Length: 339
Picture 1 (tube, rainbow, N blue to C red):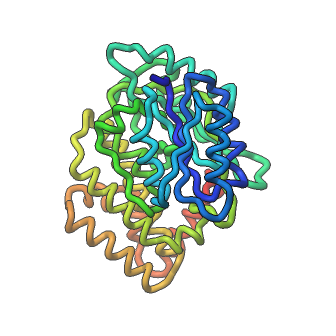
Picture 2 (cartoon, rainbow, N blue to C red):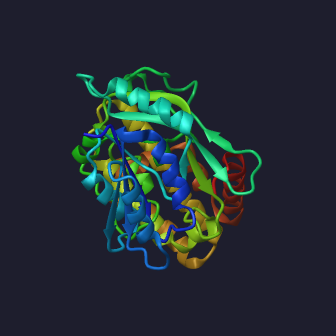
């Protein structure tokens, strides 16, 4: 068994996949790299995947499938993983070599624990194109560092503090036990990935390491604001799936429930603000439909969102309210470097 399986979803990734894979090879034989060619047709992604496997047959596996989208590629990675732990690295991103070695050392140290490590968290860097200052998203000072802890030591998070896919390494069995099956042909499913398995996590380790370099800034990138607005139906689908997951979850500790509610509020805020910033009648109607659907689906969960500070802000009435909401979103974007 490998120590760590890394799934690399690739769709027409020829221009940048080599840099990503080269950064993963620093893990050596303890790492399994699963290059999932998600039906690439416009370039040589499929051939490159096979060439990488031929060069490193004991480390790299090339898996080819019909196009299923990012979620479908992650699903395939989980299905084929043989590693004790599992991570997703997108093909235009990369890992920092020094931090990667430290992470692997920690995984080795806990691989034989009788009470197994379920999740390892690290920092990630917004590697924004053209930006001189790269924003680092870290939880140093919030989470206990360098030692395993459980939910009773997990802090109450501020609204802007949440854990993205880039920070997470799961024990592979946790993903399987959670029943995680990401929707296919849908963007923004990384939010579900960093959400649904959390009630199945018992033991957590945080390392203050800047492991993941999250490339951002291409005009066609899924997190570009204009692109997100054009895919509003997919953002809404993810929002609803996360709402349903929270409503039916069995939480191991109140702090797990509190953290996941905070994340759900953030996702609902993003959906709502994007509808407002679009300003079209269609998207404003979608916003209203989302809030009505939440109330009808599970009113107690809806109340936790609606009557929170975030919910009150998003309920500011009229054109003036929408303008204030837009200003807040713009300020947050400048502060944290997303989009």
